[in-house]
Structure formats: structure tokens, C-alpha cells
Image (cartoon, rainbow, N blue to C red; front, side):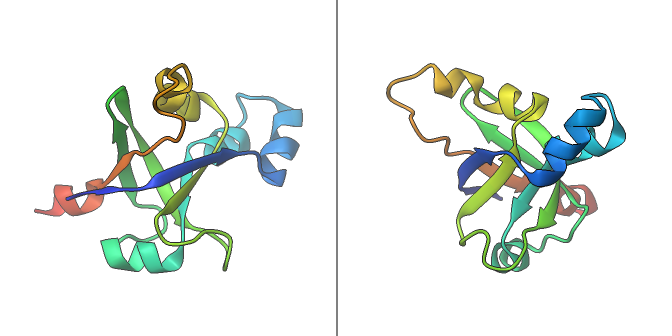
Length: 116
């Protein structure tokens, strides 16, 4: 099942420190390819830290690892992804549109799909 969300971009402290070591380091890649969601949302969708999800919109889709955000960082219905190659891939076309000022992707639990 695909569920609609609002995706929030941003920078994290870990992203900044790993960027100093280089964009091709394991830490930077992990930080920029991990989607964050609140614990309540994770429970509702049957997701666990480390699961793979597909984030899609009219422009395309990316598969990301998901993890639970720290307590009270995200409300239900919001997702967070650090700026980086995956964020650019998913969001670039919408940033160029005056109609789509907020990215509203669909989220699909790939682990659940693979288990069926």
C-alpha cells in the first residue's frame, strides 16, 4: 500500500561532519540515503529501522533505508531526508514547478511487499 506524506529536506549535524571527510565516505552516504519517520508512523506501516522503502512521486522514485526519528522531531505524516544525491533525484523536478511547492511523495514498504 502506498501512503501519502510530506517530505522535509534538511541538513543534519552528522551530515556536516561526514561531509568534511568527503561525499564518498560511508558515513555521508548512509546519512543522505536514510529516510526518517516518527515512531507512530513506523508502527502504523509495520516498518522497522533498517527496512527499505520506496519513495515516489510523479517525477520518479528512489529506494531508501528508513529509521525512526528521535522523539518529537517529526509529526505523523512527515518524512525527513538529508540533502544529497537521493534527495536531489526525488525532488528536483518539483522544485522547478510553481504548482508543486511542497513535495508530497508516496511511501511503500518494500520489505512487506517482498515478504508476500
